[in-house]
Image (tube, rainbow, N blue to C red; front, side):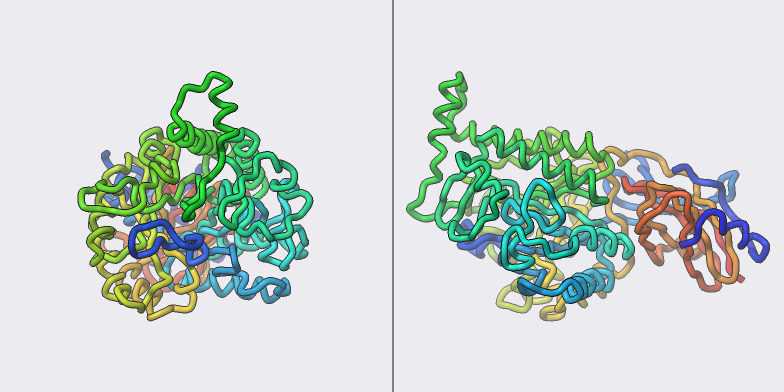
Length: 528
């Protein structure tokens, strides 16, 4: 990092100065509900030369008066879920030292970079607890083995800093309603199952927090606001746990809560009331994100089948009727920036065909709001999940990009880190060959590119101005009149500073991405 005051020192030895100062868990193959937790297995041209659909326009050949150039590339989200519940992805076991824990996280993030990925979905609330320093909820037992025990460091702060340094977005992944994964777990005195015991609903071997209790929803919103206020995360992410997946011969008993609702004058049927409860959580979360940090994304990863027969021929769990979630409404109401349906079935499985489901989900996307497809990586190399299968899935996603499918998220990160069956290598060499930034947020989807950053060139290095809202620097190599993306350089923190980038001989264009995903024009740079 170079501070702004250092720019003057470079000017004397600079060869060229261009630009102007800038402004600112997998479901089972049958399509039935999971036997265990899914996350333990589980427009004209818009900004930056990119269309609202995420495609790239041809950069103009004519320079602006400031000698900058239009730049842009095809955007897509490339991510994976880092599960902490049951030590699924990280940490590998409870009780790891700070050094060992950080080493594991560093290896995960480095694996993301090697595959040219750009987003991390880090599970920070696996069972109404915290994988970060929180005054609202106790430390997760998956860190030390005991709920409430301080590990002595802050994993979320580490992932945010190291992820951003590598050019990765970091999304805080939360489970809204799961109290405890097993009723036998010794909960800390500050845990919600203790402090709001009247809202706990035993179900199977779980303790569930009743979505119909207003205080439960208020806790989730408070946690969202707390994370957005204290951590520089790029988004809030909910998984598919709303009302619980069915357990054979078990009934989720919220009769007392529903009776209180009807006694108070409520007229909705029980099913509609349950959906209303979940809708209210999504709406209020959306409002909280917008109010607290409007440059953060909010999205949900629903079960991959909305309703049987939608599209025709699809069978399986009815998420609308059983989990009481209505992602179609959330998209239509603009409560979410994206949906990430868990399409954990192969293209060859007729009753839950990946391709048919993908086309249906892409069809509900709205302008500026995306579908990020959830893929099952845990079965890589097993049965139907050959590398050819993943190749087919990625090609289908690319074909639906124009309709709203603007990226992929893999569950979980672990098989990508280990390169199970060569999956990470295949993605990097066939589908993620060039770097890409994530699509811009819906609120900025049609915002024009800002002015190019101020750059100072000297000794093969470029000092690039990075205002406080900068997330990354994008480097393009000039190839004729169409600059080709070469590199995205993460900016961990900025504001009154400049970031140094090393370039080789040739002609370049350098732009900056703000936190909303809006890319500036490119500053022309030539290295003799």
